[in-house]
Amino acid sequence: MAYRVMIGEKSPVVRNWLESTFPHQEFILQFFGDGQQLKQAIEASPPDVVLCRISLPGQDGYQLAEWFKEENLGSKTGLILLKGPFEEIEEEKAASLAVDKLIELPLASQELLNLVQEVIDSRHLPENLPEEPEEVREEMIPTVELGEEVKQILRAEILEMERELEKRLGSKLKIELARWLESRLSRTKNQ
Image (cartoon, rainbow, N blue to C red):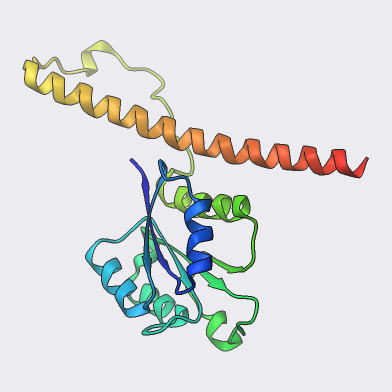
């Protein structure tokens, strides 16, 4: 299952860069050049994360962040605001924003991908895994006969959960591997 990312960005250059940054097999991107259209799309079907330019026609990033806060959307959907090199941050508005990240462009593709993955993971992965019960006695486990149809449904659900867990762990490992390689390369260059 790919992660859904809605992007409020009017620049074709930045849109192309974003399309090339996110692997198509892991992310489904939807672009909006107008903040009002972006807001309507989020209301209709909230994505995993929203990337929004601070200055966007219709409704800017500040207004979208205020709406996120009012509607309490941040618990399920991440919000990352993008600031261009020539855009000014309005300090009063920025201080009260309910956003996960405020990113200044330009930014390395891998760094953006890592930040987006962190925001998504913070909403999808539990802080820690539940502990196994110390002892499970057989008399505590009820015996229920399951029909073949129910068994097939359970098998399909278990397989889907295994795939999802494998995908999430794989993306975390990719991020950690990229960080390790990056630090290794910088050490090599410094020597």
